[in-house]
Length: 262
Image (tube, rainbow, N blue to C red; front, side):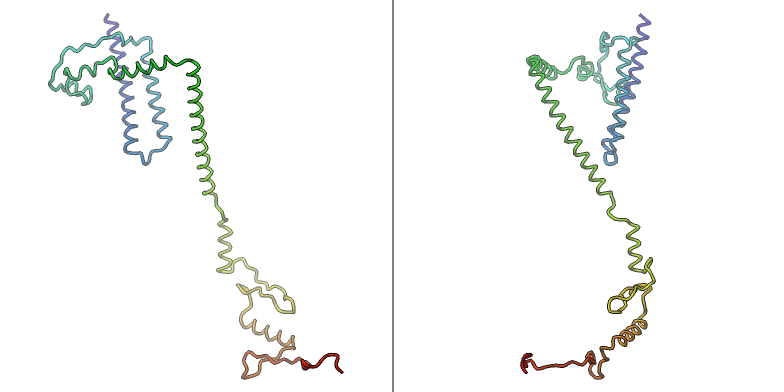
């Protein structure tokens, strides 16, 4: 008898420690959800769920252990009921139960659910028993189809969001080429200093207007040389700015003269 009592006490101590760890993990997870939800990440949530799942699995293993006595065979009987405040109960329950009176004993020592919950369980059990295997299989297939459709939509949204993020993050220009173009336009960096050969008609090309091109004096000298080479155009007369005097002799005939008249 004493051996069974010691085994029961040791099993209860182990269960109390396991439940205490589980309670701390739940409290930490609830605190994160309520106070750190803005910075909470999905991997952190998965880690919290994994920790809770592991602790629940360990607790079930302790309950199913051969050395753990069947707690359902143990009966708890309240020996003293008092409406006065009990500090020991406050400490054991962490302030949740201040008194152990006739009002709270039925709730805390209840071994069965509330009558309303029992009634709902009976209704659900009755409805489940009325279903035939064919109807149950059809409902299962319908539920699986709905779940598959929802999962497909969720995966599609995730793929679209990932592809959209990749498209937005992909650069549409080359920073090196942009920097080289700006340096060439603003400072003439990377441009050639050689002037291109003359264009049609012996006129020099328009290249070299940027860095490395001829100065204003060189342009005026070249223009004078070109005017001497052409020889067909004279300088403007003084007093008539912008009007050029032609040295080419032309025969102007009257428009009234017919070319076949003799």
